[in-house]
Image (cartoon, rainbow, N blue to C red; front, side):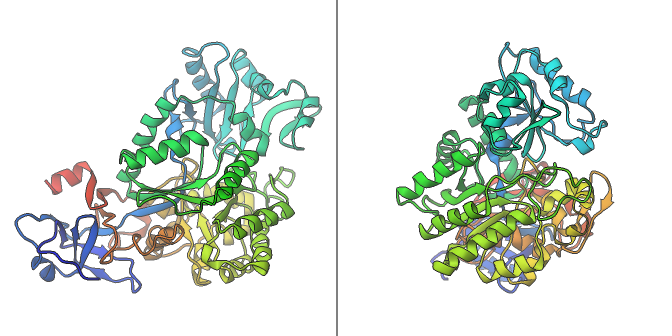
Amino acid sequence: MSFDFSYVDVAFKNGKVITVNEKNEMCEAVGVKGNKIVFVGSNNDLEKIIDKNTKVYDLGGKTLMPGMIDSHIHPFLLALLGTEPDSPMISLFGGSIKSIADIKANIDRALAIKKKGEWISMWGYEAPNLAEKRDPTIDELNSFAPDNPVQCMEGSGHKCMFNSKALETIGVFTAEDAKKYPQGDIEVKDGKLTGMAYGVTSFLLWSKVYYPVDKLEKAVVRVGNEMVSKGLTSIHDMGALDKPSYHLMQRLCRERKFKPRVYMALHSIFGKPFSKEDNAHYLALGLRPGLGDIYFKIGSNKFMIDGGSSGPSCFTRKPYDHDPTLMREKAWTREEVAEYIEFINDEEGQATAHAIGDGAVEYMVEGYEKAFAKNPRPDLRHRIEHCTLTDQDLIDRMAKMNICPYVNAGIVAKNGGNYQRFYGERNKYFGALKSMLAAGMKPSLQSDSPSGPYGFECLDGAINRYDRVRNIQCDTTQAIPVLDAIRVATLYGAYGSFEENIKGSIETGKLADMIVLDCDILGIDKFDINKVNVDLTMIDGEVCYLSENGKEKFK
């Protein structure tokens, strides 16, 4: 592609430029005019199109690469989370929550400012990481907050403890009342409510919690800025709070207050009925994925089959290795999945579903096969979110249909030691990026943040398969090289939103979405990938983030 220019607006020289083009070529220099990349090549050739008006960045041998595309992340859920007692959701993520006493301490802090009857909403604890090695009980939560409804959600977001005041909001006062809801959704043991809720009913309870929109707006802008600082130039927003999410994100992108480009799935975190209503309404209007502009587009039609990997609560073909008695969540039947995929496929939507366990993934693969038998549409690039536990047969079948998996391999760096216990030999196909790439697929790397780390900490999980929390080397069967990890975190993310021709690699004619790192990423020990920082982020040809090191270097 040729351009009519007398000089470039911005020039990067003396770099280790990872282009992610078809040949995985490296180069020294890049030139930008307006919001497009117009030159990729050598320092000498770049000098010919620089004049006094060009802003020149001397990279000094550091890496310039495409901005990362996190293909499954939840900005609104990140925005809800905070450590202050007045945060919409109090964060229980991280190493500071070591016992149920720590959970109580957060409730005590919230009660100091909450009125009687106001929700206390928390998220992030993981029972295996607590000193007690268990969830808090309903009696404990009742004693901690007798006059306020409490939501205390486990880290994966797929099982949640509630106290009695919270359960009463959906008419559950006794164990008998649990029968109003799908079997197993509200746990009953020895004839008593335990406070644990799963699946559709857990999300229904979540929908009862109120979050002020004005606080959301400020927080979402902050989250967008944090994403940019970690090298994300585009995201696939995989759903949260219904109307406030869709409307607010579209406006913030238009006003350029939320900096990353957004491909926004039609999906409500509040569960099956909400998501079905969203998707049916959208498709009935004749609207399809891709509607929007270069900053905000409507994305895939999403639903959610099973639970999480970390509880665990995902739907696996066989019971978990560490405790075969644990419930495996399944919100949709095999037949429902097939029927819904056929509906979305026939309507020319982009179908996808949260499917973590190999049982859920199997439902998706079978559903696509049945839909394609009647109406093959590999061009729609249907997705599977997470696609965490698979096998070679499932991978080969997906490859034949051009199904795109969105893999949260980064979560291994946070919880891999537990996965070794939960899934045993199945870890050889946990987040199977290596096998997917070998099969000719275009998987993309995603964080599912706040459930997992994003940015280079996410790449770390894909490359090293090392549990950074427990200092445990996990199964490395599916570990991939650094350049492969960069490709799935950039170009293949763009492919999943039908945008590989405009972003995802450093090539002439593409949008100038790029990041400068604080090192030569191919020259460091790959085990230190998690320590890589971003010095500069450019979106649309504009520098929208400079680290302190970047400010000093590029002043």
